[in-house]
Length: 238
Image (spheres, one colour):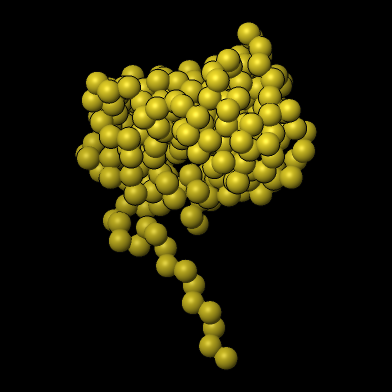
């Protein structure tokens, strides 16, 4: 009986090692660095690549790493019935035109879903919520701001009884926008909806992976969790 074929490595056509590629993607996505900042920092480590290589690698491998991280987290959390979600939308300019980045965040501050639309009406809210519910299941409670699009969408989905609206109740998701805003400034804004959707998704999952709540735990626990998160990242696509 023939042996099953081993899956081909996604790094097989690249001269650089997988370790370098993972490091480049991590530096660019996780930290508020420009393409040229990453190029200069790597040069100090003896790695000579151009900023265009950094762009190509994050575009090629970022979504693959994102899917791997997301798959592991969704499998661990799906079916957890005590979830409390926070929903919010933030405006992002693309070529001078206003767009909206919708985000679903759980009670621990982890970004569950990111979705980009041109409007923030009922239709956009419905598409966003259907996508989040399909992937993560139904939460016990959903906190939103006073935007009427949420109420209309939740009435159609039949879960309006789970909605909570409060003046400060949605601070959890409001604070989750800050890391993305820092990255947006470093990237000098976006030029296409497609690139915004891709980067928002990849950035959210990388941020989740290394979000260790260091202000809530002691130094030794933090170091242990940080080492585990880094080891898990280095094993991606192994």
